[in-house]
Image 1: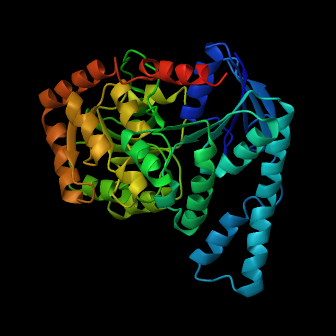
Image 2: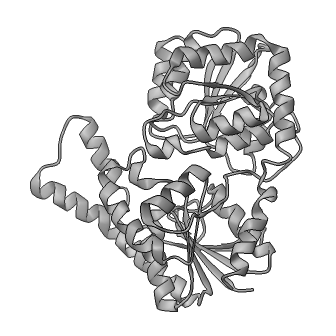
Length: 399
């Protein structure tokens, strides 16, 4: 068994995939350290998790949030010009370069036997560490970042990095079969191992957490969306759909760039009594929220190849939570929903179809319960434990 150095471009607190993979490998006898980014005031520089996995974080540095300031300025109608734009770019990049340098040094000092890079923004540093330490590299591609919502300005850079470095990895991992096919064809590499973003299994224990915390007095079904509130997720369509629904609560759990817009939208439509927002919650508390809803929605839009090939964390979270599901009819999502009879799939850009799909489950309690029972059955197989042996087997070939 060996020392595994994972690298991730966040503070890892709520990165369920990374935490599960690390815990699985730690349980298999490896010594796993996750190298991550420090969130000041919220995360320690070093800690050991309950799983035994060690986490080491590096500082962000001055200027890390300059991109947010630039975005705020552009929203007001002002555009950065000439030397000012270049200055902003320099200030934006400098702390990130230092963070990568700090991660590189700490990872090399850890003397890894395998380097495991999570997503393309860690791939160059992960590859450099693997070369310097002369050890295998595992590339874990969570997304198709060459065609991803919000990544258009980085598309050519991402393609350049992946085309040159992915073939040099000893092994690759991704999240769906469709994405595995894409990477194999795009970069001429063996098809990556597929590990879906499934939660760990736990029996459903119905709760009233959402009703209690939001003081929802009516016995109406709760329609739940949980996850980042970002563009391309079909969230404005979900609020629009709520306008056509009655005797139902729609609850968003999560944070993101669209939160203020969605809240304002709900208020302008007079939906504040039926549409509610809950801030992002810790991963270990999320199931108690999920299990207090009746219907889970995944209205993601077909805006990019990354969305077209996704199956998403939340879909499996709804399954483990025993919810009936209404989801966009994209290939990987449709395959899961239809195979296990979990609910209803609708056209990914059709607000009317979304509203009708939700209404069908809201109005038909028997149908809703049927799909919920199917979800509980599917959860016995669509869980992390059912696939983690593949990750362990992969590492047996590397260490």
